[in-house]
Image 1: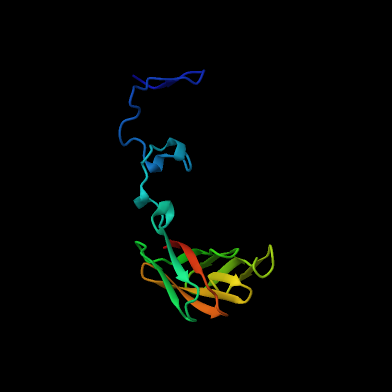
Image 2: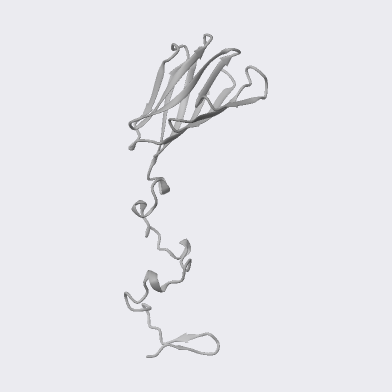
Length: 174
């Protein structure tokens, strides 16, 4: 039966199953003619996505750090299924109102931290550290990030005599 488009826009002559296999190819479709609403659920897997898209290369890992550790102490945050290239770190010292949000790629660090224990309701930032853990005015550990296999290493610089435990939450990207 021939395919007919009548004056009202109705198409006749198309049987169930549509067009024969192979008659529609990527070359015959208009640009942007198919969007995610037309795709069958599960039709695209991680192998068809760009690196790092769809959860292919990220991992979340948590650990703790004893703030009384000496100057130059290190904390390894490792166990990712890949070698990361970037990290986002949340550092929270539990006994004081202090949390920091930092990032790094092994050559550049940046952090924004809650400076409440020094000056109420203030935040401070710098581009020298990835983590900042402050327990009381003048007592803190500031950490810088380096990349290691399957994770990152934080190297701490101690000022004063900080105490307590800092929890580190890391989102690693690769």
